[in-house]
Structure formats: structure tokens, C-alpha cells
Length: 633
Image (cartoon, rainbow, N blue to C red; front, side, top):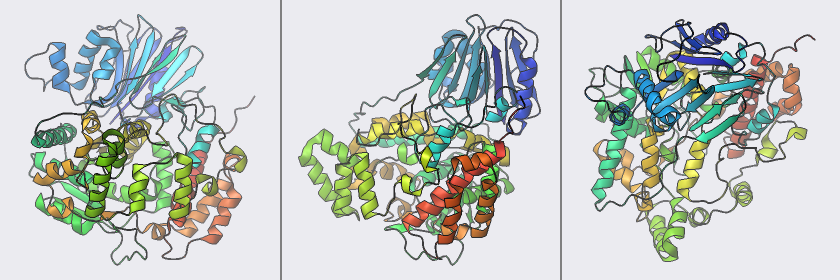
């Protein structure tokens, strides 16, 4: 585990070493008890890491050899590529990622960050230029926060590091919390804490005494690949998947666990890990499923509640240790841990009980890493009906109509669904149609935010937000990826369980390949994901590749919600004045009077109770956990 921090005093009024050590101590749960601090006049950067010390503990003020001092929480995946560009030769296994970063900074300076592939949060300080640069990987797999006070800038892996400084706490960002409660994007860089900002995923923030700038580190190439043979696409798909999974297995000590459902994404990751892992111990494959005997009264069309029988076929094929997790941890208890350890009220709340239970099982069986595939549908396994709009735009109505008819013939879809995807309406029209045909109500009707606090303006985004209408499916996926931030989730799970959770589908090489695939590799002759089906045929069974159904998470969501426990949590958060100023606690309490009947799993009930109510409880618990009394005058 690694936690980083630093403090830059541009005015050089005092040594920041003691403050830096206090920030590391406050993040001990995310690092270790082995703090390492390096300083130069006016600046101190620290790392707290389990195992080896990534930088030498040296409080002496001296100039760095390459012009930079840095602290990093990272895993570099393109080591050989970087060393070749740096002029290195011979074996590289004895070089640490910090060694490579140190060499790269000496040659390329801040341009280094855009060359890195992997999961990283890095801070580099140039004493000669008095400039601090903070950088994060494309999908925000490692967290990094910062705050500015007059002539000082502080940064840390988690907000706890910044909150250890006496002048950082300024309360909560009510605008950010309001947008969370309304299911709206938060302003780019804003957090739930007032005046504490997050480095947006895939960006670098550069700070000097006079300025603060933000820039993207990398943008994908959208030009379609043009291979002559279909097999070339298959080979590249498999090579990219093997490389991305293999990168996350490098140096792993202990057993490897993976999530395994009946879908392509987790099945592709789990089967690839099983093929690559050179160990006598089998991969631990975890499948979350409802309790035995659960019957869904009204399952969604073409969906199944229990994916474990299908997942078991993949597990048997690759000799995995398949574990079906049928008992979720109490949701309220998980929410309490989440807001304290993750220091963020935003997460997949209804699934947190199952996720937490799977993590506990993985650790009990000796796993040190848990692979997931959260971003598969946005990267390597993208596709589906949304591609119809691309075909219409790029190839004309005749081609589009042929593909429409073939899709209707080969898939269990309705004409209105095909037309909706072919001609995506503007966001307001989409919301009306969803409310009319699927009983999906707008957040304004479901939120427990006090009405007078409804956000009236669009977010002051410093980075692109996901699109609300048709651009094309490729750019829309990229903008959605830019809005995802997994940093505090990854770090929180590591602190709570000791598990390193990692997503090979978030690999930058995965993203670039997915953005360059021609659309006929995503939808062809009415078949969704034809490339994925062909490429995965060497590792997934036919029952998965050609399954007509898909799973859906937390089918037993209503059974997971303990009305009495939720009522007690509502009373607890309602006692806090800050919560009452943000949340309509009276309406929250009234919702308990209309509690869904057993088996009532309608979409509207799910949205109200499993989504908005749990989100509101998480925000309320977050405020209670971190609220502080006003300082005396």
C-alpha cells in the first residue's frame, strides 16, 4: 500500500517537513508506518509505503540530481517501451518503477506523464522553477487531492492527509453535494470538501506561486484501423487483452481473485488471468448471486437474476476455484465503512454489500489482488445497438436499413428500441420518453435534496462531461470514461481489506484499441460485438458467447434493504444541523411510510429506494463523519 503527500511553501517561510510527516501519519491506513520524506528549501514530498521504501528518507535540503523530486503511487505497465526510448538496454527486471520515472523526468520533464501507461498518481516538484505538477492516469485508478492556501500548496492521496493540516478544513462543498444528490455531474475538480480539489483523471495540474493550470495528458486516436484480414483484428484484440491482464499480475504475491459473471467482460478477464497465471493455485472466481430459493416476480426482459450456473461453466473450463457468494453484508454497515474509509459519498450503493462480501471471501482465501472489469462495456467490449446511429451517419440510410433489419432478425429487440438507438433524441426528450415508457422519473422528483438548493446552472466543468445527446458512440464513450473516477474506491478497498482491486479493461491500450475499431467490428449482420465473440472463442465457452440473456445486479435489492436499520440511520443523520440544511429529512422519513411491498421490484421503486434513498443516506453519513464544530473566534 502506498500513500503520498507533499507541501510546497512558495514563500519559503518555514520548513514543511513536520507538516508532511503529519499528513503521512493521517494516511497510515492507506500506506504504512514507514514514512519517507525528501525535502528541498520550501518543499517536502513524502511517501508511506509497505515493503520497500520507494524514495530515500532524507530530510537534508539538497538539490535533486535530475531537477525534480517526486512522490508516486503507481504501477508502470509500459516499462520496456519507456526504457527503449530512454536509451536503456539489457534486462529491466531489476529496475523499479521509481527508477524508470526518475530517469524519465530527467530527460523529458513534465512530458513524462503523458508517456506513462499504467495506474498512477504522481507529484513532481522542480525546485529551480518552483513548479509543482500533479498527474493521474486516464481513468483515475489512483487518487490525488490538493488544496491551496495563500503561498502554500498541499497534496495527498486521500483527503485525510490534507485535513491533517490545521487551515484546510473549510466545511463541505454544498454545490457538489447537491449535484451528487441530483445525479448530476460535479464540477470538474470539485469534491465534497470545500476548497479541496481532485486532480481529474487523465489530467495534470501545474501550480506555481502565481498560477494554476490544467491540461489533458493524453487523447485517444479515433482514426479507424484498416486491416485487410479479420484475423488481424482478432489477434490484436487477444494481444491487448493478454497484455493488460498480464500487467496487473506482474509482481503479485499471493493468490489472484477475479469477479466472474455470465457476461463477456469479467469472463474475459478471469479466463485470461487463469491462462496467464503461472501458479499451482487456481484463480479464485467470485460470483455474487441472490440467496438460494430467490424468485424474481417480474424480471426485466432477457435478464437473469442468478448468473452463477453460467459463470460456473467458464470456471470449470479454466479450473478456477469458483465461489458463489450468496450472503451480502448489511448495507448500512457497508455505507458507514465506505464514507469513513473511502472519504467519498459516491459509490455503487446498492451493490456495496455484495462487493464487500466478495472482498472478504477473497481475502479469507489468501488473495492479494482482485480483478474486475467495470469498464469493459466502454472499452474493449463496446458495441450494441448504439452503433446503429454511427452506421446511419457514416454509411448512409441504405446500409443502416439493412443492418436494422438484420438486427431485428438476429436479436430479440423491438422496433422502437432500434429507432431510439438509431435516432437518439436530445436529453430532455429522452427523459420524457423514459418516463412515459419505462417509468423512469427525473431526479427532480426523486431526490431528497431540499428544493431551494436545486442546482439551477450547468456545472462549471474544467474537464469534459459526458454527452447528453448524439455525438457518436465512440466520442460518447470517451467522454463517459473521462467522467469516471475510481481512485478513492480502489484506495478504500485496499485500506479496508488489504486487497488491490484492479481493472484490466481500464488500461489505456484497451481504450485506444476500442476507439479505433471500425464500427463493423462492434455490430455486423445484426450481431452485437462480433469481434469480441470471435476473439474470445479461444477462452470462453459457447454458453457465454451465445447466451441470449444477461444478468442484472442485485435482483434481490429489496430483500437487502432493512427498513428498521434504514429508519435508524435516517434518525441519526437528521440530528445533524448540516445534514438538515442540505437534505429534506422530513420527506426522507415520510418515504418509510410508503415502503415497497415484498416482491415490489418495479423500476420506479428501485430508483426511489435503492438509488436515491441510499445515496442520500451515504451523503448524510459522510457529513456526520467529517463534520467539525466551528472554530472559536
